[in-house]
Image (cartoon, rainbow, N blue to C red; front, side):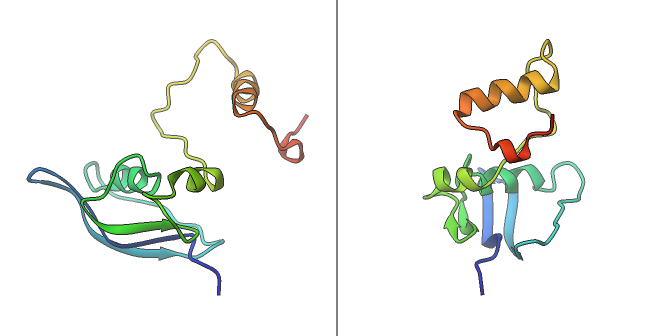
Length: 116
């Protein structure tokens, strides 16, 4: 059996007395569609930032495809992408121009995914 796409065990993030995320344990299997729903302050963005290794957990652990999100964040980032809802890119560029720029910055583009 392959590793879960996402696995968390007791994942928590505290900012002093504020518990931004408390004791989240879950598994998402490869191919499963999973969404975070909840009101503002429920911990959705905190969970995603923890999974991306952008912030470190106060307790617990998180893995993406069997890789520890904290210790192996570079490898995790090679396997996933994230576009925040509040992304502020370059307003003077079209979507196509933005993708072209990001492809050049990244240094490679998988031409099989390009639609002309």
